[in-house]
Image (tube, rainbow, N blue to C red; front, side):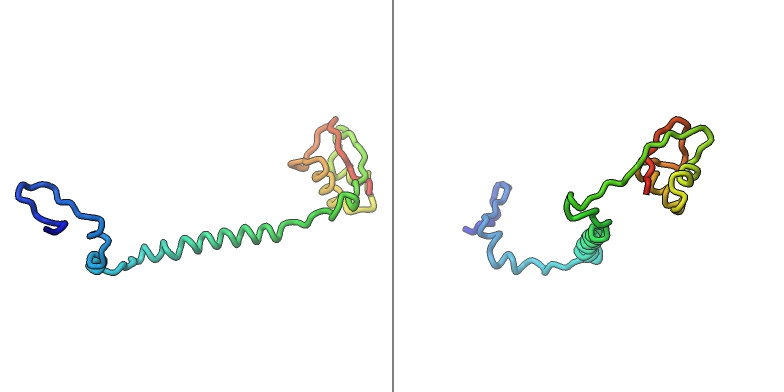
Length: 132
């Protein structure tokens, strides 16, 4: 009697594991074929992941350089504290503090030192201003 036999009383048929893993069963299956969508998934997803990895790596490699190799090489930017007066702007402060430098560079330094989001200041506000 074989593993797959028809029973007389309509009982469920049981198939042994040996039968399912046998060479005869494997040969009866058609070869695996990929559809167009399957090929897109199989090739496209790894390509998208590779592109994301390369973009991340490119961003890491083109990031700004570090300030110094050691703490001994770091220098402190000499600054003074200025209290903004009524009617004063960053342009006026930059011109008064460093007339020999381009005012746009001084304003950029002031904005960076004070973490300003815009170019506006209010009277009474204290700012760190570079002296060199």
